[in-house]
Image (tube, rainbow, N blue to C red):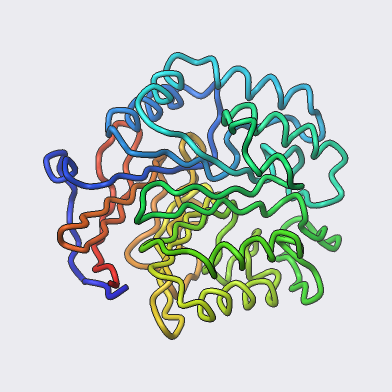
Length: 324
């Protein structure tokens, strides 16, 4: 992708002919902003909405509570309205997996996957049921492939550390696990899509903060970048969550530009981490409750990134040109 320094504000009239993908994370079902933001997303009439993890917050290690949270969200009129207006997809992060910062050793992960797939209405004949973990892939159109990564089920557990310390880099551990890596490589190798949207519960590009991120596992991060390079994956865009703030990151990876669009804080946005270092950030980080949007204009081969508040107001927008 070639990027433009044009910042723009999307008006509703500019979205009519575009293909719209919305996404978000960090959502509490009982928060008053839940109904507002779900309604605003539905009002955008998107072609798809993608959950990026922390769809609900279960009590740590309590599968019964997590199940009830999923059931409550699924039954909400505002969420049912969203389901009627668009296709919904998703992956998980730690709080809808079942335990803060958890990985492959979490004892209730099979039940959590059953709850997640039931909530997402994953078709019973989906090949995702034949695999371990929660990773999935969908063709949103002939042009767009959506890849939903699972950064929990196979992830190596973190070494113990003081709460406020950064995670030490783990050069031997894994995020995806070999089974998922093989699946991902096969998918990318054979893809004919023009755009590849890769959903990850945690950030891929931001390197410096002390929280969960791909670069806590340097060899896994390197493997992902090299996989994109090996197959010259067209127009790769990561959408990520987890951070309770939103930002757009951009990095040149040789043959193309990789974007990481972090949309976090549908109801749980915070402000304390807005000034943290991120050498790849474009513009400012967003510290109010929001959701993200990708707007594809195929006629002009352009893509708009934007973040919107709970009422749908545009908080940030940025335009790039797609590679042919």
